[in-house]
Amino acid sequence: MVGTVVIRVMFACCRWAASTVMTRMNNIPSEEDPGTAVPALIPYWDLCNHSNGRVSTDYCHDPPSSICFAFRDFAPGEQFHIFYGVRPNAEFLLHNGFVDADNEHDAVAVRLGVSRGDPLHEPRARLLERLGVPASGLFYLHREGSPIDGSLFTFLRVFNMNAETLEHWLRVDNVGDLGSEQCDGLPAGLQLAAWRFLHTRVTLLLRLYPGTAEADRALLAAPPAPPPEGAADAPPPLTPRARMAVILRLGEKLILQRALRFATDKMHEQELLDQELKSQEIQEPVEQ
Ligand SMILES: *[C@@H]1O[C@H](CO)[C@@H](O)[C@H](O)[C@H]1NC(C)=O
Image (tube, rainbow, N blue to C red; front, top):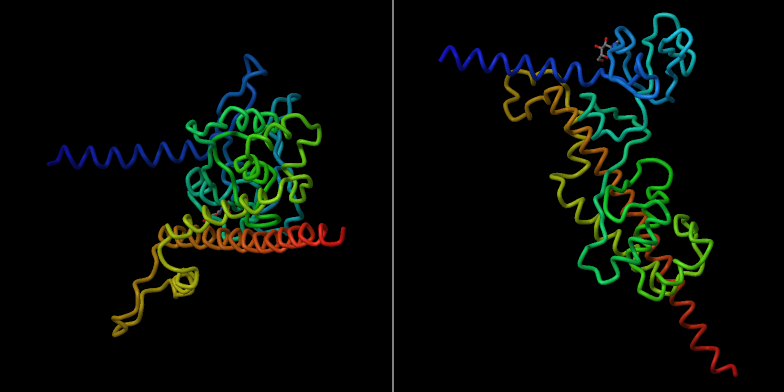
């Protein structure tokens, strides 16, 4: 009995110590071989909290030191922040133990890949490789700016190409266009297939989340103090950790909903364009 308690306490301490050290580790050039990086602790600097901004800390060789600049003006007495880097909230939670409700780089990771069983796996993977896009891996839907980035535009199009189209894009020089929102010269139906594919994926992802965004907002708006006596029906207040989990979940739902609206708009736009093209094709022989 006593033994079990000791082991539990030791494990809790060990877990705390490991997380404390690992969330504060930073790579600096090694003293013996400046070409290789070694993990180090940087006391005091590692106390700084994160906020939106830009990376403003670098390593200086002469004299060997880490130098941190303020990335904006901070008033006397104001808390000094540094920018931890471009990370979605899910990664902040995992690596740093917090989520930032204002994280302008928040994103939802989506795992996508070309199946090995796909008869066109080889040319698809070759075209993606030419563009530096993984044939299988994580892609991101973004909270700000375009919900879809160049890698995902490329993947969605290449994933839906037939043999002939793949062959064409493997030959041409303007292959980089596949990563732009506006990409000319794609065969009819391909864009629509790409948007439909995205729409389906995002719909399925959204279904995995319990509750609505509205319900999450209500949970976060509830007072953090315990409910007054007699208010037995009031939901219990969120613990700080549950609160972080709800902020993360709400942020991800909103990102997915935004991506879904984007895919829906694109689908409609493309359907109209395809219809227009079709009606022109029908009219042409009549005019001759
Ligand atoms: C960083 O944020 C935490 C949580 O809000 C706070 O307790 C701590 O004092 C802050 N650190 C500094 C150096 O201001």
